[in-house]
Image (tube, rainbow, N blue to C red; front, side, top):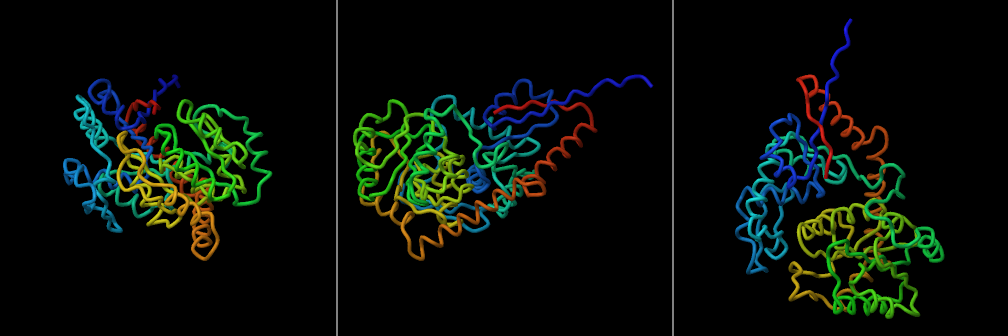
Length: 374
């Protein structure tokens, strides 16, 4: 028998915005298109519902007014000030429209989540989109268990960080990190610092270079604090038994890493879909406490809560009592479900296998162009 020509297989798996760019160029040569989302299905349902029902154009003042979000299986009302804002810069509105169109035309959606966490919202999203959503996460648990890391190289030696945590009692440390984009101004840093000092608890506080590291470092002198300037080994920190609470901006990667580690959260959303993630954490999963932010962060109104509200939220997450113990029990259960989802035979393992099988099905129909990107 003569040799068969090998079939070149390409999978196009980009975020929807990059897929939107490709949809007007090389997309015609691609027969299988997958969108990879950095959001959870809960947030995706809200945002898709906003698109379909024209809620984007109504977002804005008055920010205290509530909006009913259709298509949510559990029912959901959100304040206008909590909803993501549409692109407003010149040229980006059209770009966002092309991205939404490309996403609608894609063959499937890959999500960094797991079925046990949000099965009803995954089903709702699939119903809205008319296509399969593959929950294949939590990706932070891949190739190395809970110690796996993402992003840049850490600015602190991980062993030094873990050694510092080793010297503290279980569930005694407050971990504070607002991700890579949200900016920490001086007023905000001062209120957080005073609240954390007043708690009397050990603290790991991650600050971006050029943010307010000088003030935070000086303020933390003499306190039982570890101040990290730059990228931190977040997964390793959250997974340490000494960490008892996580003050977070509610970005999905950080939120999911906190859930995987079984750490309850103080939620401090800033913008984008972070307020939606907060609702999942606080109202659906019941593993977090709101710090009390009511509108999206803007430069002219950066400080929206004071040290009293911050201190109260930290104490509720870190303290004992029936409420605190129940919250910790719930988040530990979520963490265990996350680990099982990634095991052989777990839901994300099965979904990944199903994704590969579906790709094979496309291959049998003819050449498939496969590319992997972010």
